[in-house]
Image 1: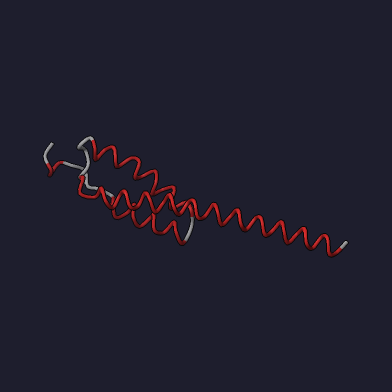
Image 2: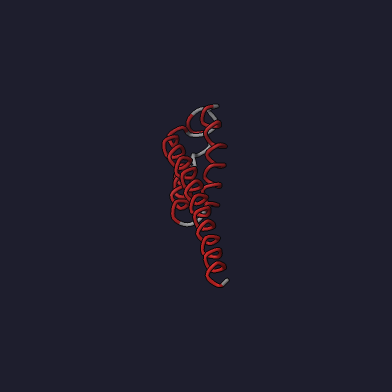
Length: 93
């Protein structure tokens, strides 16, 4: 296969999804992670344009960090919610 027959890379889309997962929702991070895990092996096999490898890897990393931060934020929120409920129950009793 020559360079004109390679599938175009989706590095920009993956990077945008990864960055969006940092600020909006972890679901964008999951999408970036899955797409990157699909595209990187295709680049290694020579089926996809390898020019977007850096963007794809950066998007995957941002997606992973976005998922981790969102899970951490959810955990902290649940902790403080239960803490507040316990404090309210103690002060009401």
